[in-house]
Image 1 (cartoon, rainbow, N blue to C red):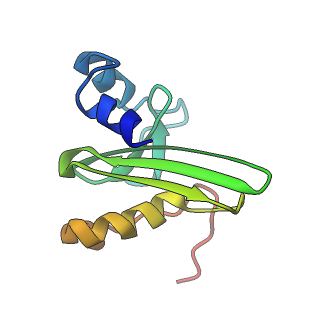
Image 2: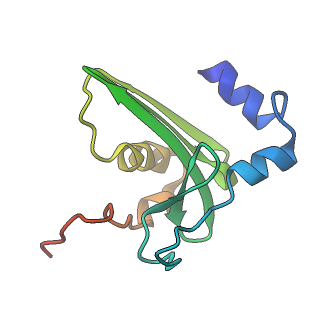
Length: 121
């Protein structure tokens, strides 16, 4: 996974222009209210709403396992999660907490709840 990340960061596998297209948000037809959306799809990546920071991620799971890669592009931090649980509801939140140790301003970012999730506050 580290080699994969290094290849992405140095644009060895893909041109930087291709990476930029992959990480460009493609808003759904239902509306493009970025403040209400937790994330939107790029090309193979989720583009996460962290205000003015560029953050992308991708996750997956299968019975008993889950994984996630979240790239904090502007902060030059990548968090890779490999979990022995398949029901990780917010891998992006776990990644944000880990990245916050290395970039304290990330601790201040308030994540939007996933679409359809209730707030009891």
